[in-house]
Image (cartoon, rainbow, N blue to C red; front, top):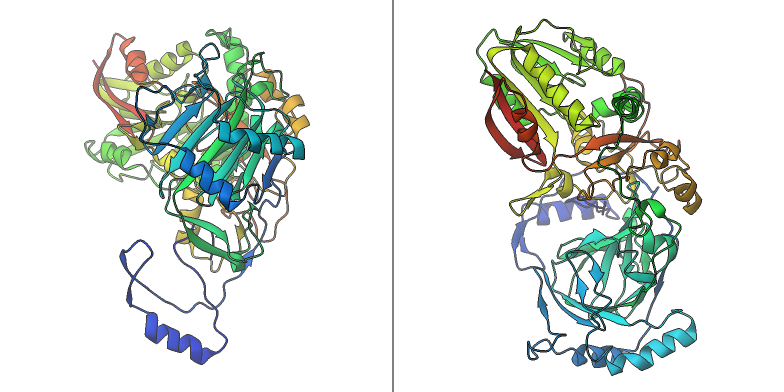
Amino acid sequence: MPPNKPYSFVRYKTTEESERAYVTLNGKEIVDDLGQKIILYLNFVEKAQWKELGFQALPPGLMVVEEIISSEDEKMLLESVNWTEDTENQNFQKSLKHRRVKHFGYEFHYENNNVDKNKPLPGGLPDICDSILEKWLKEGFIKHKPDQLTVNQYEPGHGIPAHIDTHSAFEDEIVSLSLGSEIVMDFKHPDGVTVPVMLPRRSLLVMTGESRYLWTHGITPRKFDTVQASKSHKGGIITSDVGDLTLSKRGIRTSFTFRKVRQTPCNCSYPLVCDSQMKETPSSFPESDKEASQLEREYVHQVYEEIAGHFSSTRHTPWPRVVEFLKALPSGSLVADIGCGNGKYLGVNKELYMIGCDRSQNLVDICRERQFEAFVCDALAVPVHSGSCDACISIAVIHHFATAARRVAAIQELVRLLRPGGKALIYVWAMEQEYNNKKSKYLRENRVSQGKKEEINSDTSVQELLVEQMPVVGNQDSACSVPSTNDFQKGGCDSRKVTDSKLPVHTNRTSFHSQDLLVPWHLKGNPGKNKLVEPFGPVGSHDPSPVFHRYYHVFCAGELEAACQTLSNVSVLQSYYDQGNWCVILQKV
């Protein structure tokens, strides 16, 4: 069973058995474990070869202790939680969207992942926990006696978003006891590597050091988990051995998470992600136009030159609303695509005269190979006569400029190119990746490749789908993909400049916590500009995957409109949100 795929492979001992299975099962309606009617579809395949290159180690500092308590103690703990008690009690159940929760010792505030250290709850931790905690201390599973407890009850299908418990709120050690049902918890490194970890029923998860401070942990909301099929394997990492995977239906799980409230600032070894040690980035950063230009050169221009081939192989499907804008323009219009990348919009409407430009020579070369009109230039100085374009588009470009003044200047340059009455469409990445209670495509695709696949065939459309949809996850054999503790402290793996830049490094496929940040790009395959890059790298490849960091300024709601409205000769015709981007259509007046 390949991870994250809606199909499995079955091998029968004889041809006759497989033929009989096909005749019996193909097209048959069955009822699944959730009581839903589904139809089975079968097909013969010539071969199904899979390579196992999954991450085979737990995050540093992570430990799973199985059968830490008896089934009698489990029953006693579960019965001790009164979910229906008087709401005047300060420890009463909070109404969270997806789960029931109670706090002891201190109330945990989910809006900021913190506690109010000056407001301990009356009663402390339940007496029933005392003997259990003392036993864990004595046996060396924990080093500090906790003073805060959060009890969560999860129904099947519910989860918790990926997060790191706030450094300044709690001490190094965070432990969680799983009761009632097993669960798979996902741990994710800032550079994108994800490790799924099975937490069996009655097991204790202990997070210390790197796993506590640097890796996010969360539970994906779903009703089934992909787990090891072999009975011998219980807790720990879910390997990518497709011959030993199956689905496990989730049950009701109750977790007892114990923490010790920190009374002094955190001085951990991960200052880039530590709220106690992170210095406030000055609002004027970069402090000058020269610094901004240098930042863009290092973290935008040079990066796109390096990743052009891989980047282009992931950018082949035009966004529908951009296509809609281009197709609505009058036949014969002259249109400039400023920051055209690999030219995916230059051929959308054959009735237009389109020219493209980009700062990357390698991306422009790809455009030319595709017989498009494109040239190299800076978006702040486009060598085209003023007032000569009927329309312009700027798709995912202006968020790469490092100051507000330079972002406005980029919009002004678009407007300069337009004739009076001409229109421009601008897209920028949004800070809000969840809008109207709906997650953007960027967040929804936070799925994990737990193993590296050998292609069953070379169907290009399948490859393109995989390239488009897979999260950017580094080759897990590469030292650069999973920096060691020292790398993150000292800036290994091309992260020296990251440290120097004072900018936070974003965790791919998660919500944004800063407007100015660096987003990792894990280079796959041959970086040559004319190579189609395999979605998982060349079969059997053990080459390191270099990690590059691109600078972004993600826009808050209203910010793009406000930038446009600083220009006197512009009218904003439309402003909208489209799949994690803020967008405007403006007109030159």
